[in-house]
Structure formats: structure tokens, C-alpha cells
Length: 435
Image (cartoon, rainbow, N blue to C red):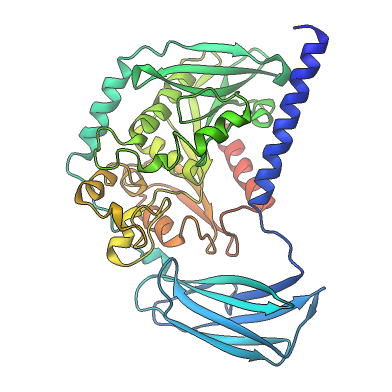
């Protein structure tokens, strides 16, 4: 490639990175003119079943408290109907809302709303009631292990047919970066990803980065590779991960719209079967590399990627460590028992079209809970009680059934996002375990 072509390629890559970074930032909490401060009256936000919670509330504008305003509050278990709502006058700089209690382990959420100058503002906080006692609704099928053992064995007979393309514009002084394609599931399906490999000759640990939900390009984990770890960041949809962003938008709103519901009534054809087997195939590839140290292998991701981290560890004992942020796909049938289920909420009461026995049967083979029951590896986990995408009830249901060395780091007020300190903690944990 000539110099002009290389500069053009780098410019395009930089533009895509900026656009994706902007999209990522939009998922973070946004600043508003009026800020509602709300929190349970215990620092850890945790109560025992039967104990009463009170929510501290104040409203600020330009950092100063507002008084003599009307606020409305709604109390409800996450994703469920309200148990109480009322309107009160905020006479002083702060007030206390009596949240009552819960009779079963779970989470009680208090929403606060107010309108100022024609603009409505809202925020919420979530109290945990004996979260360590939450039990999953999802049942383990008798043939769960044999179903997946057979699927993995059949998939292993398919040659990987590895294809690697160097991406010079993404390489650094210390790291070579490749677009990787592997044959997976059948001879017409492939899995794609970005491999970042230290240039210095030697043997290195490895990390498999599994993705959150959606359809997008990927850029690889160059930072960890520069720290001396082989990294492979994969996509799950069987399409190259270096295409023009417009292609992914077309698929997101077209052929792959609501992919998590595709063939949900057939456990052998459900969309995620190829995905889960693709994660194992990615492990096949990593352990085949001459540079791999043969022992230290981790998997990590957030949301759908948090789910895939637990799933991959449950399926493949070559994984030694896992680090999962707010895992999706956890106890998804919880709604059937009148409580919050995990993303993608296919059984939420508002979508009765999925209330079919065959679909409830299929998800038993794909729910994170049943893979968590297979996990024996050491794990690091983290989420927040304010997550409205992956409800904490669903995540605790999976976590509580893991019988392995594990540590859970709760950042109480986080929703479906993370603090930089949280990400730093995850990275440091992986580095300490792998190096």
C-alpha cells in the first residue's frame, strides 16, 4: 500500500473509532440541568428481607438544592408493576420516602419524577433485599450436558480453515494486528475477529474478548496485547468485523433485527447455538497458536459479553479465568414467576407472543444460569443495582449458583454502564491472574 493509501485507511479507521466512541459515550449517564439525588438510607444499599428501606431524595440545580417543589415517586420491583405511588411536596432541601420492605429476596426500585419549566426529570435508586438468597427460576434439563457435549464434538470435526489478514494500519511497535476468520458450525458459516499478538518472540497468556449485544465492527484489545497478552476480540454474527459501519446498521435494522428471538422454538436451530459454539471455536484457535503459553487463558466481556464469558467457561475447561460485567441472558424465564428476567426480556408480560412452551423449553439450554452451574474456574464479576437492562435479580440468580472461587464487586448506583475505576479493577485482576 502506498503512503497516500495508508493515510486514507488510517483516517477512515480513526473516523470510525471516533463515531463508535461517541456512541459508547451516549450509553453513559448524561448531565442534566436539574439533578435528582436519590439513594437508600444504607451505604451498601442492602437490607434483609423484612427490613424497611427509606430513600433519601434531594433535587439540585447548579449544585444548589431546590425547595417548595412537587415530586412524584413510584415504588416497584424491577421491571414489575408499581406497588405504591404518590405525589409529595419537597418543602426543604431533602426528604425521605418510606419504601417499605420486600417479603422475598429481590430488588425494590424507587423512581422520582418532577417537572420544572415544562421539562420532566427523573431518576431512581434500587434497594437490595437479601440478594445472596435469590434462587433461579430456570431449570436444568436432564440432557443439558449431553446436548452441548454432542454439539461441541460435532463442531470439532469441522476444520478451522484459519484465514489471517494483517492490518498494517492497526499494528503498533509492539503488536501485530490481524483480521481473523475461522470456519464454525458448518462449512458455510464462519466466525470473525481481531487478533492482537505481541511481536516479541515468546510464549504468552491469552484473553478471549466476547461482545455485547448488537452488530458493529471491532478493533481488538491492543492495550492488553502491548502488556504482553494475546487477545482475540470476536463478533458473533458470522460477518467480517472490518466492514463499513453502514453495513452493520443495515443488518441491525434489517436481517439481524431481534436476532435473539430467531428460531427460539427450536433448541437445535436457535440463533445462539452457532454463537456459543463459535466461542468454543475461538478458544480452539487461541490454544493452537504457537505463541500461546499453553496454560493461562481468560474470557471477558460485558452484557451479552458477560453472558458469553460465563457460558464459554461453563462449556470449555481450557478457560482458566473469567471476568464478567453485568451478564445478560440470565434467568430469562423469571417473568414466568412474576419477577424480572434477564435481557433480552423475551418473556416480559408485555410480549405475550413468546409465551409458548417450546420457547420456554429452548431457553433452558441457553440460559446463563445453567452454564453458571457448570463453572469451576475462578471468576471476577461486577454490576450495579440500578441496571435496568440486565436486572440485578437475574444476575444474582446466576451468580448465586456458581460453585467456584468468585468475587463480586457491586457499584451500587451504576446502571448498564461502568465507572473507569470498575474497568481498571477488571483489567488489573486479569493482568494479575495471567502474568
